[in-house]
Structures are given as structure tokens and as C-alpha cells.
Length: 244
Image (cartoon, rainbow, N blue to C red; front, side, top):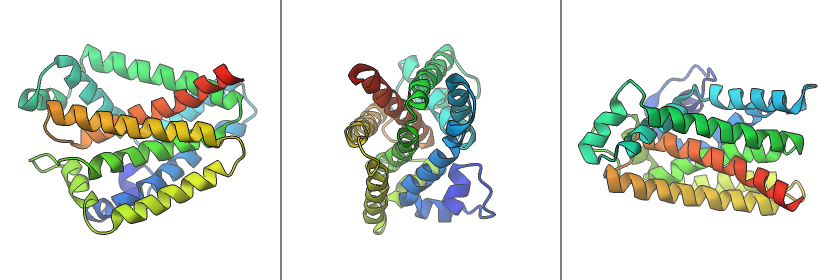
């Protein structure tokens, strides 16, 4: 409940950051809840583009736009060409540069275009899976990364992700969710492609962040979440257009 309250806008009555960070390994379950909420307009009696738009809005609204904020911050910093402390200062600036605005706009366009195709095919499972994979990508990035040297939300979650038997529980819960989604016939090849994309993006984000920052922080985790979600939406949509 603490993790759900931290990662989403769902009120649980438990607002304990320390408790939430200790259960970060349950992030794929949070992704499943996010996906179920986001996909709820799928069966409305409305045009495809309207349902896709509502799903897109809910996808960002359920997380309070926090991950999108991190995506914008890191996009700005990467475009600046700076490294280390100079890059971190750019990420912490409240104003947004052209790179952040352009990158976020493109991200939304790609996501919306993909959702139109998936809604048209009634592939609600793939939309839910994109949320699960986006949440899982943050945990994979956290457990494999160096935390920042300063105190912050990102540091707490990255440090806690490396403790206890969390990785085992994460693997079991993630695997169970995949089996549940793949149990719908004909979706496994698409789903496995999406999982591969998630792993590649988490790996890319880790390498890029360590090279230019030296660590991973909360903004980088948010960047990984949004990039993974967009990529795992466009992949099944593109494959559908090509193969069907």
C-alpha cells in the first residue's frame, strides 16, 4: 500500500517512504494495477481515437505525471551535452528547454499512435503489459545501478532494491504476471519482443546515465519508465501492421 501510494495517485492512507522503498521489488504488481486502470476505457462505446486518447491520459494521470517529469528532465540534460555536476544542475532546473518539450511531445505522439492501433485490435493485454514492463524496468535499473552520492528519493529506492530477497520475489511476481498475460492465445511472440525491448532500454539507460552522470537518480528511473512504456507500445502496434 505504501509503494502504491508513492508510485500512483491512488489514495491508500499509507505515506511511508521508507516502507515504500523496502517493497520496491513489487513494482511489477504496481504496474499491473496501473495498466488495469489505464485500459478501462477500452470497451467504451466511442471511436477508437477517443478511447486511445482517454487511455493515454489515464496512463499519465495514474502516476501523477512524475515519470514524465523525469523523462523531460533527463532529455534536457542529455541534449545539453554536459556531464557530471553540470548535467545534474540542468536536470534540477525548474524550467524546461526545447529538448525536453520536443522529446515529451514526440513521446506522447508515438504512444498515442500506437494506442490507436492496439485499441483497434482490442489488444488490451499489450497495453497492460506495457505498464508492467515500464515499472519492472525501474527496478531492474535500480538494482543494477550506482545510487547518487546525495540524499534523495532515487537514492533511497536504489539502495533498498539491493537488499534482502527482493530480487527473488520480484522475479516470481514478474514471471507470474507474464504467464497470466501470455495465457491469452497468440500474444506470446509479441510479449516476448516487448520484454526484450524492456531489457535493452534498461541496459541503455544504465550505461548512458553512468557515463554522463556517474549514477542513477529518480529522474533517470522516470526516464527509463516512460521510454520503456512508449517502446513496448509501439512494438506490438508496428508488428501488427506488418504481419497482419
